[in-house]
Image (cartoon, rainbow over all chains, first blue to last red; front, side, top):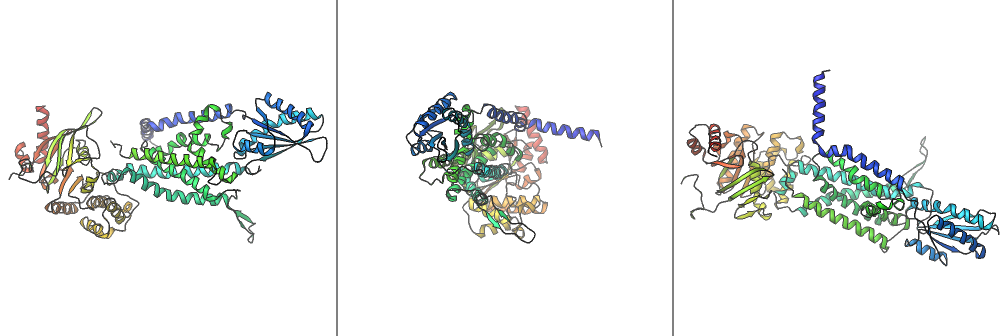
Length: 381
Length: 253
C-alpha cells in the first residue's frame, strides 16, 4: 500500500468529478428535488375531491337517509346533487362530471334496512379506492342515524371494468408503459451518444444526409426493437400459459395473466407511440451528455417526475392541485390513461378519451423528433 | 509555370476547386481561424501543415460546411458552403476514425456508400482494394488494429469517388509501408483530377504535396512548394523553416 498512490487516485477522482458539472448537479440537486417531490406528494395529497350524485330508489326512508347523507357529505366538503336513476348517475361518472354515485335501494333480505351501492369510474382503481373510503364513513353515519338500527350493506361497482382484488390491475398499465419508455430511452440515448462522441455523426454530417433522414432512420431502427419489446411485454403481461405438473415440478403458469377487456392491438399502438417519442427524447438529451454516465443521470431528472406524476405510483386524482398542470404535460400520463382505457374500459378507437391519448402521444413524438433533428447539426467544439 | 501560381485568376487556367475568402471562426474570444483567404487549383495535393491546435481541423470543417464561419465564405467546386447537395462531391476523412465498430468492414463501406447514393458491390471492392483490406471485409471493425481502422476510414471517404477530398491527418497510426501506398494512391487520384487537402503535423510527409500551406494560430503564415518555402526561410529543413516563418510572423506583428 502506497499512501502516495492512494492520494493520487483520490485526487484524480475528485478533480474529475469536480469538473463534471452534470454529475455534480445530479449528486446534490437530483436527490433533493426527487425526495422533495415525493414528500410534497405524500404530505399534500389532497383528500380526494368528491363530486357525488345520489339516486334514491328506496322511497321515504331512502329520502331520510339520502338527506342525512348529503348533509354529511357536504360537511366533508363534497359537492352533492340528486339524479333520477342509476343510468343517469353512471353517465355522469362515465364522462367525469361526477366522481362517485350513491344508489339507495330497499334491502331485499331485511325489510328495515337499506342497500347502498357506490359507483365509481373504474379507470383509476387506486383513485377509486380513495373515493370509496372518503364517503364510506358519511354513508354509515347517515344511514345508521336515519334508520335507527341497521348498518346497511355497501356494495362497490364501477362504470368501466369491475372492481377487483388483484392489485396488479391497478399497476399493470402504468408499469408496461413506464418500462417501455425507460428502456427505449436508454437504448437510444446511449447509441446516439456513441454516434456523437465516436466521430461517426461528424462524418455522417459531411454527407448529403439530412437531419430529418437521420432522425427517421433512427426512429425506424430503434422503433423496430421497441415494437418487439412492447409486443413481448404485452404478451407477458396479458398472457397466461398453464403448465401442468411435470414429475417433481408442481403445476405453474407462465405470464402475468392480467385481465384486459380491450384489444391488445390498441394497447400496442399506445405503447409504440410512446416508445417512438422516447427514441427522439434519447437523441435530444444525448446533446447535453458527454458520457454514457450522463445519459443515465438524466433518468432522475427526466423520467422520475414522470413516474411520480403519471399515476404509476400515486393516483393522479389525489396529487396536490398545484402539480396538476405538470401532470397534464407528462407524456407518460397519456400512455397510462390510454392503456387503462383499453385494459379496463375495453375502449376502441371511437372513444374520445382514447383518441385524445393517442393524439397527444403522436404530437409529443412529432415534437421531440423535431427538436431532436434541430440538435443534430449543433457545432461540436 | 510556377507551381504556386494561382490558376483561374488570370482567366487562363481552370477555375479553382476550393476557395476561401476572409474566413474567420471564433469560439468566444478564441479566433480558431483568423482571416484565411486562398484559391486551390484542381488536381493537386495541398498540405495543411501546422502544430496541434493551430486551426487545421476547424479550417477543414469550414471548407466542408460542417461549421458556419463567423465571417467570410468558403466555396467548393464553385458552390458556396455549407451546401448539402455539394457534400456528395466531397470526401472527408475525419481525424477520429468515425467508423461503426460493431459493424464489419464491408458493412461500414456499404452504409457510407448508400448514404452517398452509391450502391452495389463494385465501389466497395474498389475501396477495399485501395486500402488493402479485402481480406478483412467480414471482420468486425472493433477487432481491427488502429492502422486498419484508419485505412477503413480512408476507404469510407473514397467510396463515392469524390472530386474533392479532405483528409484530416490520414496517416496517423499507419505503418511506413502502407503510408507509401497511401501517398501513391493520393497521387493517382490527383492525376485523375481529384483535388486533395491533407492536414498533418508531420513534416516528412510535406514534400509529397504539390503545395504547402503553413498554419499557425488560425492564419496561413506561408504558402508554396516545399522547395520554395525552404528557400524563403533560408534553411534546408522544413521543420526549421516552419519555426523560422512562424517566428517571423510573431516579430512582424
